[in-house]
Amino acid sequence: MKSIAFGTLKGGTGKTTCCFNLAGALALNPDNRILLVDGDPQCNLTNDIGIDCSDMERNNIRTIFNNKKVEPSELILKRVLDKLPNVDIIPSNILLIKTEMELVSTAGREKLLANYFDRNKEFFSQYTHVIFDTNPNLGVINQNIFYFVESIILVSDVSLNAIQGAELFTFLWEENIEDLGIRNNIKALIINNFDKRINLAKDLQDYYLSEDDFKDILVETPIPGSVAMKDTSLNHSPIVVLQPTHQAASAVRKIVKELILREVF
Image (cartoon, rainbow, N blue to C red):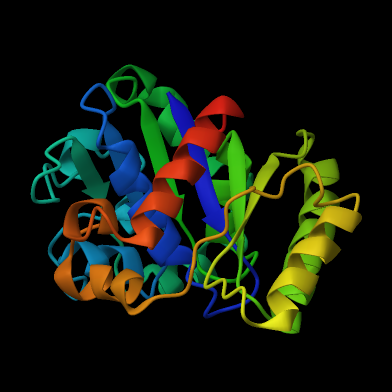
């Protein structure tokens, strides 16, 4: 089982859209079985799937932290993507922000999620990939996710703020992993909403390639900016299904192949 999280410290980079669409491309291989986990109280990934996150009765990722004995099968919604029956999800809930505050004084709070997956590793071993979406911070919930996963994928758009966000994420997470006693698991950086007609786009690529923190993790293929990618959220369907011949769909498939070769996926 591969465990991956998408992260950023800048909102608006299209992180959730990347997460949703790359998972969809992975799911084109019927041998892959994907579990999406929405770790964002804004519930963007849950909404992209077409699930109402305001349902207070439904189990979700928050349940893991509030009820450590909950069975994994009680958390998961199955076959949530039309035409991709090998994708399941643990949805989020708008009250996850409340859990964030409740965990601040909990002993070993960064390892609660990892402990839960370890206790239930036989169940989760049915999945080839467990893919987490997060929100733009390094709060307790995200620390749990980033501590657990083998690989973190950063997502940048074409802006100076995105560079600062990637640099800050890398700096802060490197400080955290020293305290947590784990290796640096930031394995990839994807440039999203790329438009080669904009001078800053090429400058951004060159900058990442010149920096020691990023040159070895920058993904070769950027994702072009397009209305089609934004439509995937509205249509609750990844672009490889919605518009498989679109240039963005081609880019997404190339990225998946590269990340498989890198053993991130």
